[in-house]
Figure (spheres, rainbow, N blue to C red):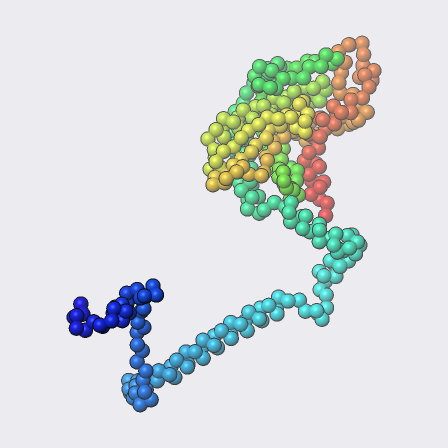
Length: 351
């Protein structure tokens, strides 16, 4: 501490000298003094740096500043060159792709504004690549799981075996149903918009055609709801099998829900709906997997399922199929399962 004799005599000066608040309420802080070299001292310092093998201080600072300027200039020139390379040249001749685009805008879209709108719409409804890769792995898991279905004998009346699924027995037809055995599918194929890369938001779907074994079906199963009843039982058996397997979520997924719902609102033709939530995701995947049981190709003669044919035999033995008239709606319900893979191959061949 300073001695009393060295302190200022005036109270105001004493406050300022020791950095205390002054009469105006402010604090005075002293700045550090910087020693300024004289020209003779600068020359002596430069001479000493030269003797030590170093550059003079001023020259070093100038070179560092000049090098920084050159580096900044080089970076600016490189960025400008990159922008110029990306910028289309107005005087350049149009390429072949540009000429084709101009012709399509003129002939197909009639104006460029409509084409721009459709391009933005396509970007908005197209699925992301990372989502497709995840769902493709899940589809492979579903295919492996279905191939492990165990055989099961189903009675003719399976209404008590599968909740919510009952065989169709209209009173106006001759109903004869035998017991049958359900086994693993013969094959599982991707069908629909997923394989054609035509899935659109907001509902992204992947359809799997699950082909029933040929041993399940007979040549005359296309009449009187025999095939549709076997198809409904097969869908219910698939749903029950998948619920048991997916009770423990497979690798890479957090949960898998299995639902048995009518396909396109038709209760006669149920389908299995799978909704998956992947591991680490905050919400379920936008993809919905639909399992569709189908008949083997050529299981029934397509000519017998023509719109003018009758496939619902009457219960009255005296009446014939011609007396009852055609059954186009029922025939189409059976025929679409036979032609599902043919339709996919037809659409895939269109260029």
